[in-house]
Image (cartoon, rainbow over all chains, first blue to last red; front, side):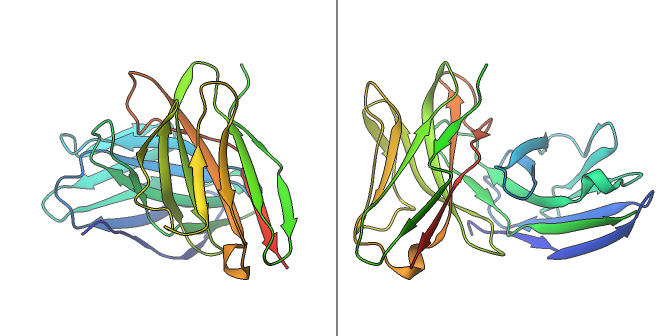
Length: 113
Length: 115
């Protein structure tokens, strides 16, 4: 119920291609879905986030698509660049002040130059 | 404006020793969260603290682990009598009072190795 399932575990994309990472959740009480980017040896950094009242949010080359009925959301990285090579985590939260963030297991993305 | 600071960045302990991990939140932040990350795994929530209060410790093992966030000074995650299974990266995050808790800013982590 509290899990966030993320796939694929790893992804290799050619430079300029589209990287797509998918996540699914069960708990319909979740109302905030952030994505974090983590480079080796660093802490995760908030990349982009969405609420279930919108179906898509775009920030630069990064887009979140949200399907409330299917309880799925995905991250699309357009025109993928070698600098995008990192581990990406989807997450979910109920947004209540005292509730925790639940993270997916991560996707290790490698962009080929 | 310094970000979340954690020290030490790397910590090696022998089995049975104690590990102390420190986290200084961003300036103006009064909420601290600790997460553990195992290789090939996501971040697992451990504990959420405010100044002098533990709000949620549901993710922290009942034995050997404790956390505090005193009125003055950094937050401390303490692991007593460490075992090999405690080897992991431990991340601290902070968020401001009055802001959404999901806007958490993470530190660089402490990598604990138990030999």
